[in-house]
Image (cartoon, rainbow, N blue to C red; front, side):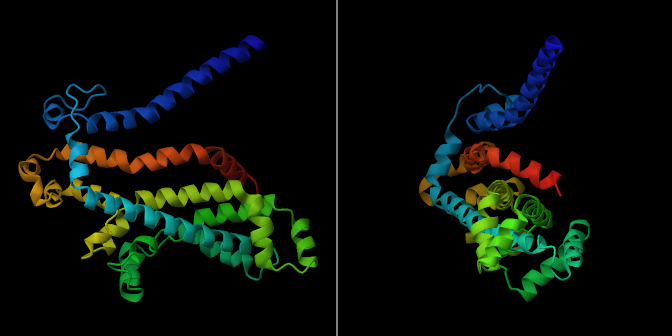
Length: 295
């Protein structure tokens, strides 16, 4: 039995190592491509080992740093505000739905779940947000549409509150004249840190990687472009790079390594997520397991 268990452990370790390598290889290829010269990529294609190391792409980003840094700062700002608003609304709605004596609780839960299956579509959504809420060419256009609250996250939060926050503890707090808001902030949220961390990571990733809202709602105000919108614009039109080049760059602007700059911006955009994820990993796994299985 011990031999079989050891053999299975070795096999599972090999499988996990292969899966981990499969997850890391794209990032390695991305980083290597960002320091490979344009000519080499065009001639030999992408490679995990750079034939000709060239930091021109990063030099260009430094020389045109104002636009890139502004887009990067806008991404951080939108992700911070959006994640905070998202998690606050998710916790509030999830807490209300966790109360079994809430009038119309099942009906409200049904309507929230229904939005996971059916929606009005992109065109009605665009008309509502742009003509009724007037978010076009404003930072709210990057924060509110589609990302402000997620039905799946609400269900996870509700399940976690229901199964991991003792009802007796909440009733004891009510007997001590504690309000529902007090119970939420002083009892429910402190006991739900794994789920809060998990949903915060979900929301932060969604805002960090979002480019659709910028594509639809930033019509004239390009100053609000996030780093993802800049990258998307470069993918759709290589000449977009030359528009960011200042007149002082001279001949260097005419030889901008478009492929290398795309890769370099992608590397820069994912570095904060790669740094932050290990700190959320433990809470991420625990929150998903408990919130998704129980209840």
